[in-house]
Each structure stands twice: as C-alpha cells, then as structure tokens.
Image 1: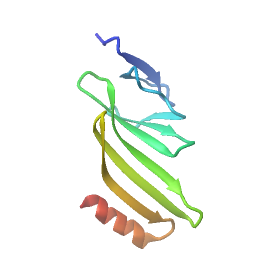
Image 2 (image 1 turned 90 degrees about the vertical axis):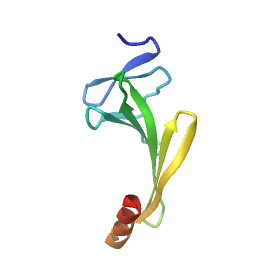
Image 3 (image 1 turned 180 degrees about the vertical axis):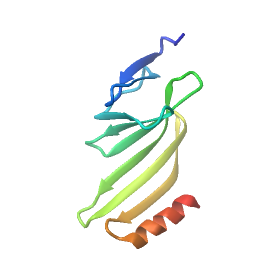
Length: 112
C-alpha cells in the first residue's frame, strides 16, 4: 500500500511512475530503465534524475544542466543530491562540439 504523500505520473511512453507529492513534471518525463527516470525541462536545459527507492517511489538523486554558447560549445554541469536539502557538485565539464580531443578529456575527468 502506498502512502498518501505520493502521486502517479505518466511518462512519454505511457508508463505510470510513482513520485513524492512535491514532484512537478517538466516538459518531458522519460523512464530509462525500471530504476531511473529523467524529468526534462526544455526551457531551462535542466534534466532532473530520479531513482526508484525500496518503496517503488522515484526519488530525486541529481541534476544535469546543459547549455550551449554562441561559439558551438556545450556546457554540462552535473549535481548529485544525497538529500533533498543539500546539493553537491560531482562533475563539471566543457565539451566543444566536433572536437574529439575534448571528449576524451571529459571522459577521463568523469572516470577519475
């Protein structure tokens, strides 16, 4: 039985997922697996990442912020949320589109 402090929300593929009541659906909600969902806000470039907990409720675990500059650079900033009160930066990178060397550097920093 689910708590009254949750709600069910439909994804773009027609799946229904359970979230806390404070969850607000953005432009597009996508389920990547049966454990991870992405709540994509097209206007801001934010992707809110949620993971299913032991109660089958999708909890916010982090964000990916994506933006592009006028000189064809993509900026990507990832934040992890260990609790709903504290945001901790775990990765920040800059990727020049069409430049494989920067992509390799970005992959090395991410795996470190």
